[in-house]
Image (tube, rainbow, N blue to C red):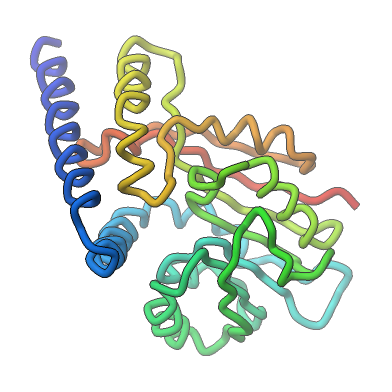
Length: 250
């Protein structure tokens, strides 16, 4: 027990030092350097998110709503396209991101999947996806998007709007630790303490969101939300996750 507590405290100290260092680097870098640092950070983060892929397996067997000819899938904040392996064959793929910094990596990766029909890379805001028509998508998927949204409620309303009735969402979000143990309450305090720095480092990303609450209130039916707390000492701030699936009412 003593050893476990020591390791726990040590991991928090190391994570704090790392976060403060990243914050200092971020505020002194030029815009070009920040962009390069952002790309490097995303590529590094993507390598550590393979554990999320199993929660998107249901995509592989999806069929178009109302028997339309091809399934239309929108991925929000798709990064470099880590989830392409989970996309159903022959679907029409759309991507929405807040900038074009990762577009070259996204396009490079999707070229490895010839059964996917890439339609458009849209630069826009998840809270106002005016580029995308009402009831036009069979599926909308995302990983770690609500953590950065100014208003998760608006973002989810937009997801609901662009989905066809009967369309599906698949999602994963890092979030605030649950309050089910003293250890997790300590980690909650740590997340709240580091949240201001994280918003600077992560381009608005927040550590303290309870995204499951926003999703539960958003109106999707057949909603499944799984809470997972990982034990990765390299990601003390980001070990609390939710994964889930839901359907837009007919």
